[in-house]
Structure formats: structure tokens, C-alpha cells
Image 1 (tube, rainbow, N blue to C red):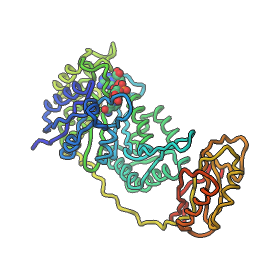
Image 2: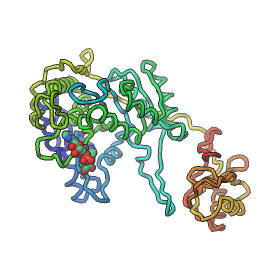
Image 3: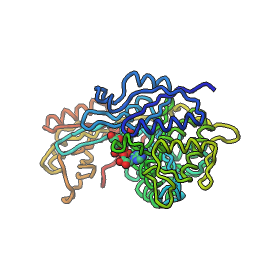
Image 4: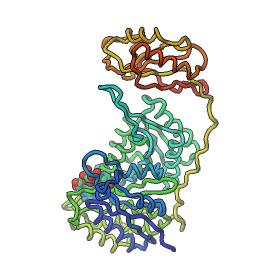
Amino acid sequence: MSKVPIAVAYGDGIGPEIMQACLHILQEAGAEIEPHIIEIGEKIYLQGYSAGITPQAIETLRQTKVFYKAPITTPQGGGYKSLNVTVRKLFNLFANVRPCISYHPYVETNFPKLDVVIVRENEEDLYAGIEHRQTPNVYQSIKLITRPGTERIIRYAFEYARAYGRKKVTCMTKDNIMKLTDGLFHKVFDEISAQYPDIEKEHWIIDIGSAKLADTPEQFDVVVTLNLYGDILSDMVAQIAGSVGMAGSANVGTHMAMFEAVHGSAPRRAGQNLANPSGLLNAGIMMLVHIGQAGVAERIHNAWLRTLEEGYHTYDIYREGISREKVGTREFAQAVARNLGKMPEKLTPVRYVQEGKNPARIEIPPYQPVSLPKKELVGVDIFVHWGPGSPKELAAKIQSVLPPELKLTMISNRGTAVWPETMEETFLVEHWRTRLLSQGGPIRHETILQALQGYQKAGLEFIKMENLYTFNGEAGFSKGQGE
Ligand code: NAD
């Protein structure tokens, strides 16, 4: 077999020692890989590269298409951009996959049967980072959810479940509140899940769903969710499994994939041969499956389980009475390498190779655009910075300057409708949404420009507008609370 080129970064803090330990195990196990070392992280940030990576390193990633990454240190202070977010966005790594498993009784946990994979959408949602300060007191962050992005991640979750013999996919959203964005995610989940009759599916509202997940994780299998919820859930589940330090994660896209430990560079532990390399090793195992070397991955995974069973434990999981010996990073790696070819006796052995075949790389078909709905402009929300004053006064100002095609139908403040009905108790800030709707049929952009000119004439400082559309007659905008 010819060696597969992979980009390798040793990172910062404990990064170099755990990467060395992992590469030692991979090589001992017979992984056919050719590491291309790239430098990333603190040093590169301090050289003036704001994302901690050089253009040459990006070129290496582009060529190898596989990135095995140790944790890095992000220097304190402003101006530095997340390397992970940069690589994810540059290479369209849309899926973050994090298997979280309990290794009871060898690693302490309240959930001995926990075995959950979190599949998190990796690019959209509030992580678009589109934020504004609009008035002295009001800031916003825009949550963007797309149909192609949603279809891709949900299909990925189902394909993952099939490839790894998992039985159920659970979707979590907050679509009772965010009816359009989270609503789309839920709707697409229902559409796509229907194409996988062999896999059980369910949907939970994220609040009670995450409570359930924290309470009875053994009832969950694969969980698919939006970016922010997934970020929180994946750390939570890794932690209750026993330790964030044990979990690996894969960031997967159509053209490239990045594999890393879940934890950071733990600078206080650096250079002391103390750190647990298990998180990075688990990431390496996922990488080997990804590059078609599932047999090697299986050997390493089973040897690692055997080592946990034998009680050779790094300080973070060492427990008097359960562990046999407290070992350092190097000694732990040597113990795993010695166990290559052995199977765990108590923990369940893993099997990646089924009937002599590697699990197929998960391929997601290109997005097939659905037939485009009829989109009609029916109004506009104009946001204004105004006050102090009452909603009634604001309404009167607006009504005196509107073009005849538009009618003021609602004013809301922080999302709560405060006009035409106003409740004295509602707290008001200087940021108002004024909703103008067509008086019959679609309107033209000129009408919106006339409305804006009217606002200007009335001395209203408009800070933002959102056009209101219908799609095949269905409103593409939410109502105000209490509207
Ligand atoms: P951290 O995960 O590095 O460390 C938290 C604590 O967990 C440490 O004090 C240590 O006791 C323990 N720990 C972590 N990994 C361990 C291991 N392998 N073995 C044993 N113990 C381990 O989190 P932090 O202290 O918040 O962050 C430190 C630095 O890492 C920061 O600069 C942060 O930006 C960076 N970071 C990088 C990544 C990444 O590269 N993907 C992820 C998270 C944090």
C-alpha cells in the first residue's frame, strides 16, 4: 500500500508530546502514512498571521486533504482569529463528529453505558459572526441557517449512523421559538429521515432534550444539531462520559478533514510527560478509518482499550484502587504499542472492518436545489433608534410619512409587540422594529425607498431594514411576540 500523505501539526503546550506519542503508536501499528509537518499556533500568531496559520501551511492542507492536529495556544489579547474556525470555513468542514463513550469501571463516570456521537453543524448558525452594535444599548448577532447546509449535516448524521451500525438519530432544535431557522432544521430532518427507514429517529426540543441527555445518556445514540447547541452538548457529553481529555473529534468536509483532540493545549502541564494522549489518539483512529486504514484503526483502538483495562493510567484518570500504575505520556504510549494485537477483555472491542471490508468513506451527494418557490415582496421591517417616547408617538410619526401602498401594522421592542396594543409593564429600549405591510399584492423596491425617505423626513434614524417576503404565499418572517 502506498503511504497516504497527511498534514501534521505538533501545536503548543502539551501538543508536541501527545502528538509524538500518537505518531509512535500509529507507526508501530503499521499505519501507512507520510506526515508533512506544518507549523501552526502561538508562534505563527505572534509572527503576525492573525489566524495562526501561514499560506504555505494552508497549501499543504489543500494538497494532503487530511490534517492531524495537536492543540494550540491562542495568545491572549485581541485581534487573533480562531485557527479552527478559519480552517473549517476555508475548507468547508461542515460536520463536527464527536464520539463520547464511557470506559466504566476504568474511568470514573456516573453513566457506565454512555455511548453517544454528537454530530454538530460546523459552519452556520450564530458562528457566522455577523454582529452589530446598533444603538448605545443594543447589540445583535445574526443566526443564519441554510437549506443546503442543513440537508448536508442531517444526511451526514444518517450516513454516519448507517456506516457505524448505529440505530437511532435524534435531532435537537428550539423550533418552538425559532420557527424559521430551527424550524427549517427540524423540517429537513423529517424529510431526510424518511429516506432512512432502517434507522430510528426522534426530535427533542433542545432544552428538555439536553436535560434528558445529561440524565439518561444511554437512551441516545447519534445526536444531530445546530452549531451552537452542538458546541455545548458535545463538551457536556464528553465530560459526563468521564473526561473531556479522552475524546477525539473529526471536522469533515467534502474535500478535507481535520482530526484533533477535544481538549486544549493545557500549558501548565506542558513538557512534563504528564498529559494523556488518548483524545488525540482517538482522533488519529478516526483519521485512519477516514483514509481507508480501518484495520490499523481497529488494532490501535482495541490495544488502547486493553491498556485502560490493565490500569496504566495518566494522572488525569488515575484512581487509587482501580489503576495499576500512574504513567507518563510516553509510558502510556509504550503500553498501547505493546498491546497492539491484543483485545480488551472486559470493555467491548471495536470492529471497524466488517466482512473484510473497510467502512466506506461517508460521501454526501451534491446539493440538489429544490424547485424555487415564488418569492414576493410584501413589506418591510424598518428598525429605528428612537426615544425616549411612547410607541403611540412613534406610530403617529411614521403614519404621517408613509407611502399609500404601505400600512404600519406593528411596532415591537426587543421582539415584543408594543403597538397597536401597549402594556405599561413592557420594558422598552431605544431600538424599535416598525413593520410596514402592503395594502394588497406585492410591492416594488421603490415603495420601500419612499418609506425610508419618509422616515428621514420625520427625523427617524433608521438603523436597519429587512424586506418581508412570502414564498408561495407563505410568510417568510416571524410575528412579534403577542402580535
Ligand atoms: P485545556 O483543555 O487546555 O485544559 C484544561 C485542563 O484540562 C488543564 O488544566 C488540564 O488539567 C486538563 N487537560 C487538558 N487536556 C489534558 C490531557 N490531554 N491530559 C491531561 N490533562 C488534560 O483548556 P484551557 O486551559 O481552557 O486552554 C488552554 C489553551 O488551549 C488556550 O490557549 C486555548 O485557547 C487553547 N485551546 C485550544 C484548542 C484547540 O487547539 N483545538 C481547544 C481548546 C482550547
